[in-house]
Image (cartoon, rainbow over all chains, first blue to last red; front, side):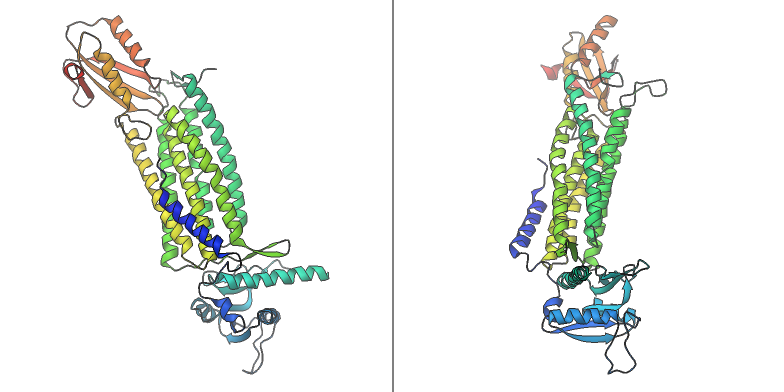
Length: 163
Length: 327
C-alpha cells in the first residue's frame, strides 16, 4: 500500500474540528470584525461617487446616497454605530487591508480592480446597464462578509415579496 | 476478435483487462467533466477551489494518454517502424508523469505564495431559495463528492495496470490518488477557513502537493529510464523483470549451452529481449535454435520479440547466468 496516511488524518481532524464547532460560529472572522461591530462600532470607508455615495461639503454633514442608506440599514440590524472615514480609494483600501476599516463603499462594481485588497460582496443590485453593484469587506473576515451578504439576500427576498 | 499489440496476441486475461481499462477511462473522463462543471459553479473567490479545478483539468491528460497509447500500440510493425509502436506507451507514461508533477508544483506554488503573502480567502453567502447559506459548505460537499470516483476507479486501475504491464495506467492511478487527496485537502482547508484559520487552505494544499510532486517525479524518472532502454522492470519499476532470470534458466536447461546472458528493455506493454549464448560445440542446429526461441516466447505474452544469438565471448552488460551458478 502506498497511501500516505498522515495528510489524510490531518485533514480528517480539521474536518471533525469544524463539524464539532457547530454551524453557528462558522464562518468565523480571523480578526473578529463582526463581533467588534455588534453593539459596537462599524468602521466604513467612503469615497465620493454619486449617486451611490455623497460625502457633503461640511465636516458635520452626514454622508448620503443609496449605498449609505444600505449600510445604515445594515448597521441598525447589527446594533452598530457607524464611524464614517472619508478618503480616496487607494487610501481606504490600504486601511481596509490594515484592519483599520471593516467595509469600504463608493459605487464599486464587481469588476473593480481592488479585489486583492478587499473582498467584494455578492451584488446587492444589478443596474440596467448590467453592472453588478458591490461593496468591499476586509479580506478574509468571512463572518462579517457572510452576515452582510445575508442582509443583502434578505433585502432581495423582501423586495420580491413586495412586488 | 483477437486483440494484438503489434504482432503480440494478448491472452484472454489481458484482453479483458484492456477492454475494462478502456471502459473505465471513458467513464472516468465523463465523471471528470461533470466534476469540472460542478467545481466551476461553486468556485466563487476561493483560490484553492480554482487550483483544484485546474488540477481536474490536468487530470484529463493521463486517461487520454492511456487511450491514445493503447490504441497506437496495437498498430502492426511496418518498414518505417520495424519494432512496432509499443513505445507509444512510454510517451504516454512521460506525459502522465509531467501532468502529475505539474499539478504538484502548481499546488506548491499556489499554497506557498498564499501563505507568504498572507492571503485571506473570502468565502461569503449564496442565496438558496431566499435563505443565505455559507458557500463554504457547498465547496466542502463538492470537494468531498469529487473524491468518491477516484478512490474507487484508482484502485481498479492499479490492478489492471499490473495485468496489462501498462505504466500509463499505473501513473493514472497515482493521479487519481492525487485527485482524492486534493479533494480532502480542499475540504479541510475550507473548513479551516470557516473556523477562522485563514492559513488552513494554503497549508492543506502544501501538505498534499509535496506528495503529489514526488509521485510525478517518480513517474517522469521511470518513464525516461524506460525510454532510454534501461533494463526491463516490473510495472512499478521496483525490481528487474522476472522474465530475464526465467529466460536465462530456460536456455541453460539445454545441454549444449555453457553460459547465457539476457538483456531486455521495456517497449511499453511488451518487452524486447536479446539472448547471448556460449556453446560447447562449434556448430548450431537451426531447428534447435528455432525450437528454443519458441519455447522462450511461450513463457510470457510480453516476450514475443526475442533474438537468440550465439557468441564466442560473454556479453558484459547483459544479465548473466553461468552453468555453475545454476547447479
